[in-house]
Image (cartoon, rainbow, N blue to C red; front, top):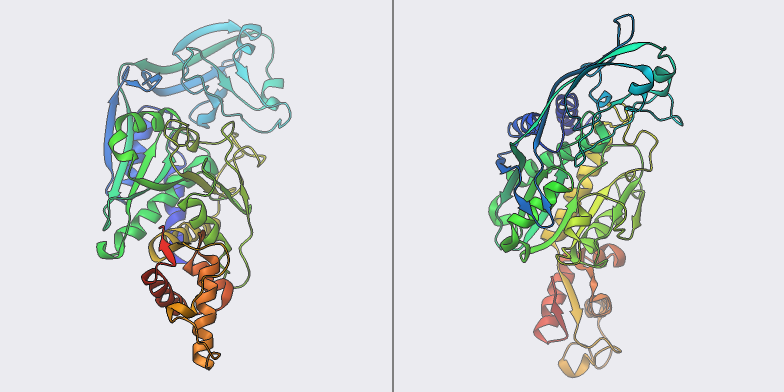
Length: 435
C-alpha cells in the first residue's frame, strides 16, 4: 500500500514544476506562496543593490513572453511551451536579424541533441535562447523576428524562512533553493522534501524537540550569501545543517560531508544511513566536502563561517544525464524516491534528537572498574555479566563518533540499558557527554 505522503508530495511537485523561477522575481514569490499553504513561512524581501558580504543583490528580473519567428512567420521557439528556452536573466529585446546574428545567441547541447540546456547570465547583461540541437539544425537562412519581453529593474530578492523552536537555542539548519525554472530533481524536489519535513516537525510537541530547527528557501548562492550576511547573530547557534537538492531521482542516497568532516551532523547522517531498512540495508555512498562543486554548502562552509553543513541527496548534481536540461522533468523524480529520502532526513533528526554521544575520559586501555565497584571481584553472575559487557561496550565506543543508537544496533544490547550504563559511567567520571 502506497504511503499517503507520496501522493501529497506528488501533488506539490506537479504544482511547483511549471513555475518559471530565477534568483529574483515573481516566480520565487509564487513558489513561496504555494509553500505557505503547507507551512507557515515568513517571507523576506531584500532590496536590489543591498551589499551582502562581497556581493550585491542584483536588479529584479521578470519575464512575460519570449519567442523566435522564422522567415515564414512561424514560431519556432516559444517560451510559453518550455521556460528553459530563454537564457535566464535575458535583457529585453525586440528585433529582426539574420540567422547568422541570431546564432550567436543560441545555446544547445550537441552531445544531447534532443535536450534543451539550462543557461543563465545573472551578472552580465546579455540575451539568448536555448533550444535542442535538432531544432537549431532545422533553422533556415533568412530574417528572424526575436522577442524577449522581460524587465530588469530595481526590486528585491525574496526568500522564505521558518523557525521551529525547541527546548534549546542550538539550531539545525535546513536549506534548499527556489530559483531554478522547470527542472524537477534540481530543484523542485528540495522544496517539496523540506516542506514535508517541516510539517513533520511541526506536528511534534515542542517538548519533544531538543534543537531549534530553521528552514530557509532561498535563491542559490546569492540567497545563502544574503542570508549569512543578515543573520550573523544566529550563526554561533548552528550545531549542524543540511542542503536539500537532487533528492528525488532513483539513484542511491549520497551524503556530502561538511567541511569539518566529522561534525555532529556528519555523524548523525551517516548513522541514519547505516540504519537497517525494513527489508534490506539502504544503498548509500558518502563523499567528502568539495568546495569546487556543489550548492549552498559551499557558502555555509566557507572558511570564515565554517558551519557544519553537509548535503544529503540522491544522485549528485552533474552526475545524471538530465542535469540542467529539459530532460530533468517529472519523469526523473518519483514520489517513492522523494519519500525514501524524506525518511532518511527524519532518521537524521531522530539521531540528533533522541541520541547521545559520549567521549571517554580514560581512552588509553580499559579503566579499572573493580576499584570503583563496577566490576565483580570473583566473576560476575549471569545478569551482572550482561551489565558488565554493556559497560565495556559503552566505554570502548565512547569516542565522540558513535552514539548510543549505533552502539545498540552494533552490539544488539537494548538502548534503554545502554543509556542507564552511560549515566553510571558519567557519574564515575569515566565518560563525558559531548552531544
